[in-house]
Length: 79
Length: 141
Image (cartoon, rainbow over all chains, first blue to last red; front, top):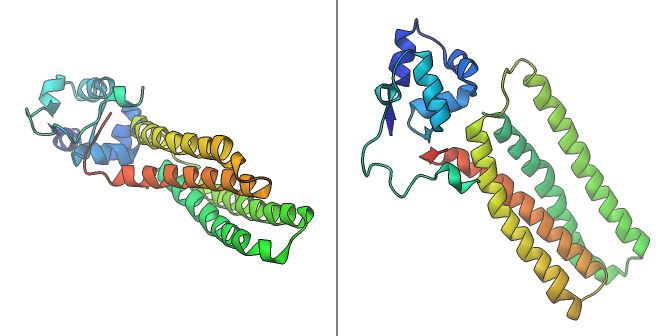
């Protein structure tokens, strides 16, 4: 899964990772991991990020079929 | 470095060295024929070192985190949950060995040390898996 978080942050008057994290309820480290594609957030957080930038979820996060299969876990793994 | 990562490093560094020394000493102690009180004293000293090192480290971490708005989020909880789940099975296996297998052939301090060993192993595995979790190339909630 890829995303436009870094670009949207830049367009939002160069919002810092810490500021974005504070507004969506994540740590700065997690925002950095999302931008680098090392972490795929929950649907709830994805909606919150998209809402913050005034975009739809599919405009911020892009899923590529087959791209991450077999390497990702889901939220059901810890429930 | 996230709050959970700092705590994991602290837990590993405060726990592993002292308990390694303890278990090595326990292998050698039977030749010295220690009394019950000496064995308990040895364990108390090791546990005290562990506790003091951990508390001191935790106080230092908390001082640096005083102005952090959020210490843990869903990513930290996901990594922690996965590590804890794996560690649980290590503990379960250890307790089966200590409680259901060893009593047939061993007794006394051998059981105590074996139980302690599996607890330390479980904690070490949990914190090691947390640190590995942060280095994984891809992780999803």
